[in-house]
Length: 229
Image (cartoon, rainbow, N blue to C red; front, side, top):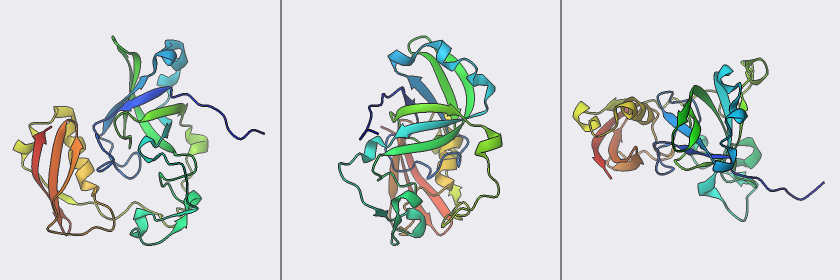
């Protein structure tokens, strides 16, 4: 038994999220979100991906690169519980853990060849910030990974916070066409912290090279502006 072992980052994600704010709380919530898994030079051997196209979904194991700390706490305050109730860190998916490792299930859309970086995985539904380092990739196996009868603890179902999004079509024109539906899906999931409900507050986050600003009144989210960075 050893105290630890070294790991290598095999890849990184290219996504539309420039910061942590706005990222869906779980993978798969916004299927319109497309990202690319770009491998580090050492791992750009096409043989490493042989057979992967036969799987519809993949597990991404990655590092919470924006939450690396030298200390840890045995309890955290999950946003799902309003940020006021403490739960054991191992009963949550909080990024603040002894080892800042995340796990996401994504849909494999395509294995494509990029002239500059070699073979790339195009995936949907990732909940990762742009540049997040990936530690490993494993295939999703429905016969063992899917458990419809499983209990969800204090998060048994998806949050009932899906919002109606009011966004003039003209505001979306500054976005790449493939990112427009994804942005609307992200906004509908209510990117605000669960404990914030200030109707007068203007929220903002970076997405696909733009800055998106919005307000929320009840169940209606109004986009105020989408401007290029």
